[in-house]
Structures are given as C-alpha cells and as structure tokens.
Image 1 (cartoon, rainbow, N blue to C red):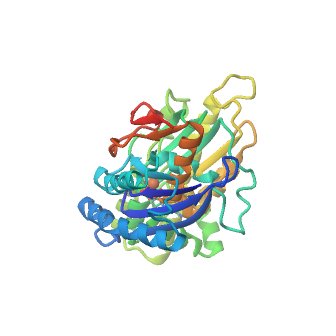
Image 2 (image 1 turned 180 degrees about the vertical axis):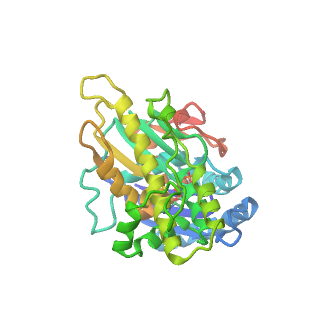
Image 3 (image 1 turned 90 degrees about the vertical axis):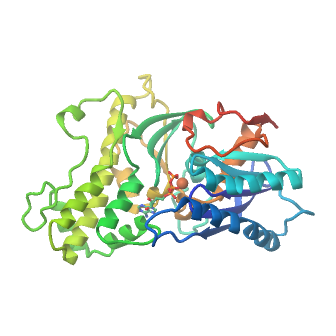
Length: 394
Ligand code: ATP
Ligand code: FE
C-alpha cells in the first residue's frame, strides 16, 4: 500500500509518498518534496509567515506529487500521516487540517504522528545512499538507546517498545543544534542551515592546523588562542554520579560571543573557534552519555536500566554531523559493544518520509489511527505518546 505523509512543524513544507508492499517488507520512499521558506535573512522563523507559507504551498505540492506518481481522487493513497506535534501549532495545523480533508475526501485512515518519534525511527528507513555501510546492522532491536539531537531537542531516550520511551538525559536549557547555530552566528556564519556550514568550515581547515588546534586547551590561557570555552558540568559537584544526568548548552553561544567581541578575529582565530565549538560541544555530549552508561549500563545480569541494549540510534539534524558520529562510535564507554545506526543525512533533518515511516509503525504494530478531531499539540512529551488521546483502534 501507499502512504502520503506531511511534515510542517517548522518552516519547511514537506510531503512524501511511501510504499510498503507487504507488512513484512521494508518501507520504500518513492518521493519527498521539501519546500523551504527562506527565513535566513529574517534571522529566524516568523511564525505567521511560516503559517502562510505552509497554507499557500501544501496543496500545490500534493497536486504535483499526485501528477508525478499517479495518485488522486480516483487512485488515492491508502494511509495519510501528518505531524501532530510538538511544534508551532499554526504551522502544524496548516498541513494537519489539510491531511484530515484528504482523509475524509478519499475515505482513508489518518495517523497524527509525534515529530520526535519520526526522528527516532528515521534510522529504520532504508538508505538511499549506495556508498553507505552504516545500515549494516539492519533494524535496531528493542530495547535500544537513541540520541535525539536537533534544533529543539537534545536527549538520550531508552526505547523498550514502539510506544514506551524513557528520557534518560535531557537538556536543562537550550538544544545542541540551537547552541551550534547561535555560536556559529557569532562567528559571522549566516544561512538557513548553519550546522552544515559550520561543519564544512571545519572540514576545510588544513589537517595540520586541525591537529594543532586539537592540542590547544580552551581555558583562556593560551596567548595566541585565548578562548575560554569550557565543557559544562565538569565541576567536582558534577563529577559525582548525579541523581539525574543532564546536558547543558547555553554557555556555548555566550562564551563564543564574548571571545569574538573581545578581539579582532583573523581567519586563523575564526577557524580555531569553529573547530572548538564542535569539539567541546560534542565532547560534552559524549561525557554525559558516558556518565549515564556508568549509572545504568552495568554488565549483563546486573539489572541496570541499560541491560540488553545493543543498538544505539542517532537522529535529528545534529546527528548528521560526521565529527559527532565519529566521536560516538569511538568514545562511548558502553559495557558491551554497540551497533550504531545513522539515518541518511537527508533523513536527519525534518522531512515527511520519517513521519510516514513512524505513522506506518503506529498503524501496523499498534493498530491505531487518529480520530478526525485531533488538534496540533505545541508541547508533547515523548513518554506521553498515547495518553494524549485522539486514538482509535483500526
Ligand atoms: P526539532 O526536531 O527538535 O523540533 P528541528 O526540526 O528544527 O528541531 P532538525 O531539522 O532535526 O531540528 O535539525 C536542525 C538542526 O540541526 C539545526 O540546529 C542545524 O544547524 C543542525 N544541523 C543540521 N545539519 C548539521 C550538521 N551537519 N552538523 C551540525 N548540526 C547540523
Ligand atoms: Fe525536527
């Protein structure tokens, strides 16, 4: 059967067509269209502009996709999925209401999907990249751990089943992607997707300079590179195993901002700063996850929370970053070897394919669909997937 999926939690209007031949076969992405409202120059998303953009765009995109892939009133897709939350309600509603309209017109079931479940399960979509070996481990098996690292979220989630999620580590302030974007802006980077620009800038630094930068501490004492950018949560108080393991990213943009404003930045200093933003921020992520492993990841039979975890899934826009991927694969101290799952780069950031994929899981495995009264949800905790209501048995 075929699935039409919508995602509009931020300022991209995304529509995808997916196909699944039998319940046992893999989900196949037939097409994905992403229309982007270029909010770079505005320095952020203007909510009403984004709402108007979705409302103007979505119908035409569906018509185009239908013409290209032969669906419409006489040959409708079999299932309709749309992001229900969390996110900006106006943005979400624009395509959720449109999806409801199609569900009624075509007499098809609708599934309202949690955006972060979409990100979490994106690694289960088959890779389109022939050069990739990262899908070598197949589908992750429950229980597995997932690092969700995006513009609005940074958390480690333990999934014991499709609908049971426990947030193990959460950020106490801003998300990693937000911190990367704000820090990179202090360096003068602009653009719609700053994370990849920062990554490119660092990749273009000559290897010997990168090797030099690696050896320099960011304690503010180096006379050539006097940047102070310390890893959060390393005071003696934080080195004890805490009651609750947490991330914190709000210090990054402020440290970078004060460093950049304190002197004339030449290109070497700019490169150094860009390199250290990624390095220190990702080190913080690794450091906290390792604390969680110490706390919960005892050996088999220890009864720790992480017992039986063999798979580690990365998702969200920041998980597209190759430096972060490498660090996760080489620096995590799990008591047993982990199989890492990384979605294709295009599936890391917001897209409708991941929403369709998660919707299919809900429909097939939980045998649930949404009722037509559901509304977009601004704040929707991951562990509240089903208790929000609005579900009907298929
Ligand atoms: P959420 O999913 O939490 O609601 P979002 O949808 O805005 O937030 P995503 O689209 O998943 O987030 O990711 C966007 C974030 O990922 C941005 O902060 C962007 O800078 C960052 N990002 C994207 N690619 C990379 C990369 N290669 N390296 C680092 N960061 C990246
Ligand atoms: Fe997202």
